[in-house]
Image (tube, rainbow, N blue to C red; front, side, top):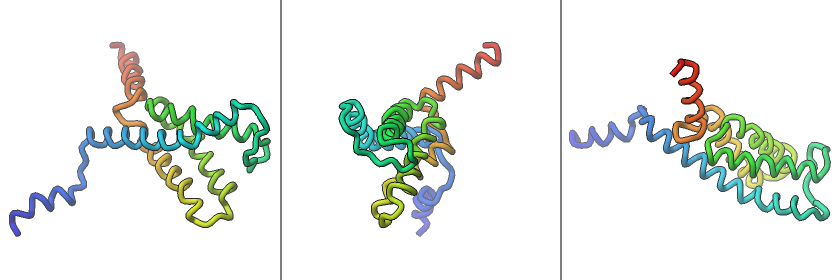
Length: 152
């Protein structure tokens, strides 16, 4: 039993490695953004085709405007997440989009239909709290800003 203690200590260790956290945030940002792009790029194609747009208008601004807002969030903001650029700002439209999907578009649907929007929303909430991590353009920009304020 004594030989198990080092293994058990590692399994239940609550300390974290900052580099590991930064890599995890990179994987999370890139993965969630790539998955959201599978929803956003077809919407972008629909918007660019310019024909009659059949899209939900849950907030009453028109189908085309609703589609444009969804494209902005799902495509533009997802690219910002991949880059780690303005991450906390970029997740806000994505969170709003998921809230609209959850509370308006899928409000009467069973939990199985609501679950994807909830998953995205939870990940975006984590990114709002944590930011992009060190492997991001946000980190590069914040480092430059810190240097210039100190007079380096």
